[in-house]
Image 1: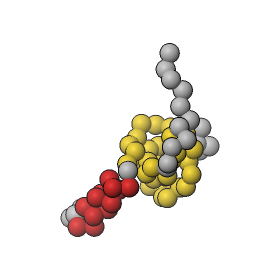
Image 2: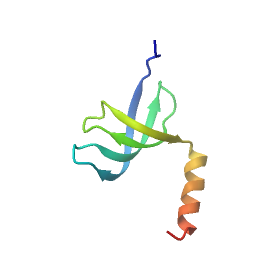
Image 3: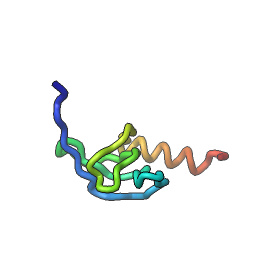
Image 4: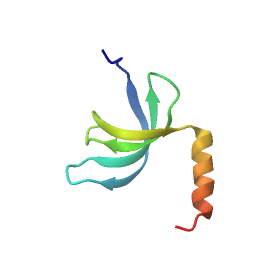
Length: 74
């Protein structure tokens, strides 16, 4: 039986896109199992009750990503 987990979106930082069914790709601060919030990028249902696969990043990870994006030729 899969272990249950708790999550809370503590702050929406930005919405990157929205699909036809209302799901949004968001960068949020999310607290997983009552831990300190981390940066999280994934698709969310309109009421945040369901989520798609995504990635969770530490503050160090997000700083490195920000530095890369600031200098990348996209």
